[in-house]
Amino acid sequence: MRAMIYFTKKEFLESWRTSKLWILAIVFLIFGVMNPLMAKFLPEIIKSTMGEAIAGAIPAPTSLDSWTQFYKNISQMGLVVMVLLANGTISQEVSRGTLVNLVTKGLNRTSVVLSKAIFLMVQWTFCISIAFFVTWGYTLYYFPDNKSPHVWFAVFPMWLFGILLVGVILAASAASRNSYEGLLMVGGFIVILFILQIFDKAKEYNPLSMITENMFFLQKSSELEFYLPAMIISTVLFLSFVGCGILILNRKKL
Image (tube, rainbow, N blue to C red):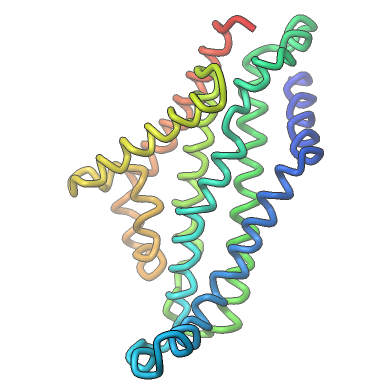
């Protein structure tokens, strides 16, 4: 347990020194500021570029527009940035040989995977919280309406999907020889989810629904119950991927 605590501290310190944590924080902060501002000034942008006739046909922006920008940016760009920076978290340690001395001195390989899981989960929670609270504050300021009553219910599925990706990253990184192979594995997993999303009957079980149906959750929290199977499956998959990462690393030659 003590070894896992020290290795977790090492992960946070390394992320601090390499500026990865700051890069993620700044990216998500930019998203948080940009989301409501884009919704607020989009009519003016359209007016200046396409003319008043087209701008006049666009309805006045609401809080829904701000949250639409939030979920679009986080799902399309935020998660991608997180995956790119976290990818190779185990394979790089193995290729550099940094785990050899630690393991020979008594560090359990299971602790390595669990420490990295804790670090990546905290990092993801920290980053999405920055974007969420900044977006929420600006949205309340610019759009004081009641059209987005369930902001907490809507953001939870997206957070959970990010946690699932953490598990996928760990398993892929443990199984791959380098960052590129790990990235291909993570990408393959996402492609499979997109293929499953084509079938309507699979949507309530597909984890991808947790980042595609957020606007429904935002307006009507009861919709969240329909996708409860997807959330349960995501949790089980996360635990399974972390377990796979532990098994693979325990059998891997360092």
